[in-house]
Length: 156
Image (cartoon, rainbow, N blue to C red; front, side, top):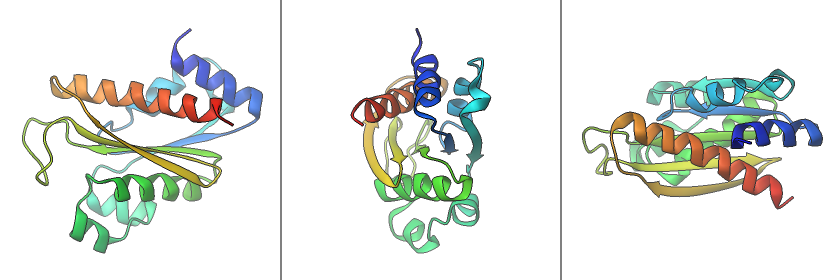
């Protein structure tokens, strides 16, 4: 059983909903989840906040934070997830931000990624460094985000 099927099944069992705020993955997490039959019972919505402006306007990430630390940082990932949970009125929010390449961005190497998972107001952020081509980095990020959400739910 794939992790997205496990995630949908667990969310159904727990009566929980999920939404996503995606930058580097640009909807890949949401798309992966909704491939599962019955995902409409748990998936509320996805925000593709690819620009800085959309992170500020849709998710409430302060422009000052972006100006000071950039978008590829743990604080931005955390606030994206928390803003998503609030905007979507959902139990769980997953956010991703990072650099899929091909160039160094914000002095962050290609493959540097931050994933945040907010469950009922408690947020964790993890840092990853992946290698490979752009799509491979995006896919690795998507898979890791779903696994992290599953791991967090298993601890509840």
